[in-house]
Amino acid sequence: MHSVVRGSCASGKPPQPGGLLGQSALVALLKGAQSGLMLGALALAARWLGADAYGRFATVLATAGLLAVLAQLGLPQWLLRQVPAAERASGHTGAGRHLLWRSLRAVAVVAAVLTPAAVLIRAAGSGTAIAAHLPVDALALGALAAGPLALLRVLGAWLQARGHPVAAQLGDGLIRPSALGLAVGAAAGLGLPAQSETAAWLFIGALLGAVLVTAWQVRGRERDPAPATAETNVGLAGTAPLLGIALLHAVMANADVLMLGALAGPGAAGAYHAASRVALTLGLAMAAVSTVVGPQLARHAAAGNRAGLTRLAAASARTLALPAALALPVVALAAGPALGRLGPGFAAGAPALVGLWLGQLVNLACGPAAVLLNLHDRADAALAGVALGAAANLVLNAALIPPFGATGAAAATAAGTALWNLVLVCRARVLLGVDSSVLGRAPRPGAA
Image 1: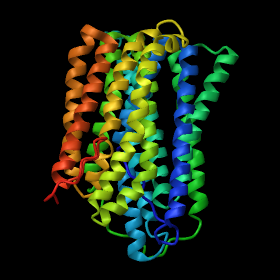
Image 2: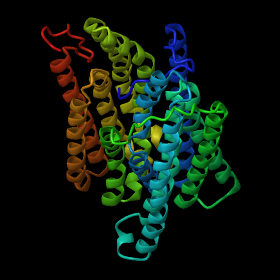
Image 3: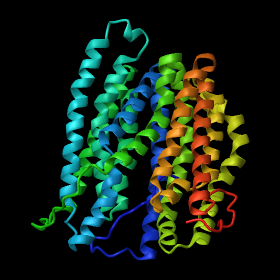
Image 4: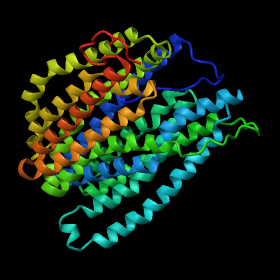
């Protein structure tokens, strides 16, 4: 589990436990809906495009996801920390508004650089020998989509920091996948060319629509003028560690698809991406549960209640890992026929799905180790563990994709995921004395 939901009420007072639990449960339901909608939208795209074209579209999505994290500059996580702090310091709910405008300006600058870069990539690569080995057009369109995706996530983080977690999920969680699914369905129904470029432009259009709706939500909640003395001198230098962790996670989430497309071709990348989206539902389930238990973990951490932290972390890990383990035989048997329904070539992703499912199972069984380290101001330990996993991911993908294709990419990604999770569990046990895993061992005496 990677993140804890943080926010503040409009009054600046902490939310009541009952209201917090209700909001967290609703956000968890929205994350579940997001998973279903995105899976449905991508299934429609896969059936419409076919394995090869869908593989190029998957490269667009992976490039956008990776570059968007770079364009975000660590600002979503930074806003979640700085906005409530600014409001508490000034006693005014609009005190942190200038942080939003500062963040948006910074992201807009990066987006303004990415847009001409995308044009240059496409112009320089098209019709050359590079295009024979790299999906230049897909990389360019992914770079073009990264800016709007980064803006959407910064706006969502602002809403969450201001105490509107449900509204924060609507743009990226519901509107974007819904719009993409509707657009792909309409394109297929109208008989538009089944090309990855068409799907990429539909994706960019869905992103822009989600940005506009989310910006309208922010504007509707920020009508009152901010106080003249509200601005603080908080700089953006503190975003560097946050950007580092987010970028490493983005590398692990997208490097496999990008490297597979480059080393094994778009057909292999398409089948693999379809399989990985199914396995990713476990990660979204983990994020949903983290949304519910995160505030409770924070209260136990603030009170120094290591026994309570251990019980809650272990219970959440078991809640997720046990069903995932029981579902593994079903996934192994049904993966081929289920993926095959997307069209010719997709059933080849079945072994990859089983491998990725195993990696996610280790992720679930390790519990919220990263959250616990961050709650105790040990983000340095979390960063080191994630960096080790990302390095293993890249090295193993480079070594295993040429001989084994999609199955090698799945093995490399699962191994990297298991490695960083196990390292973080060990670090949490040593530094905090808390076992976040399904084992839930008693707190270790003498730990800080």
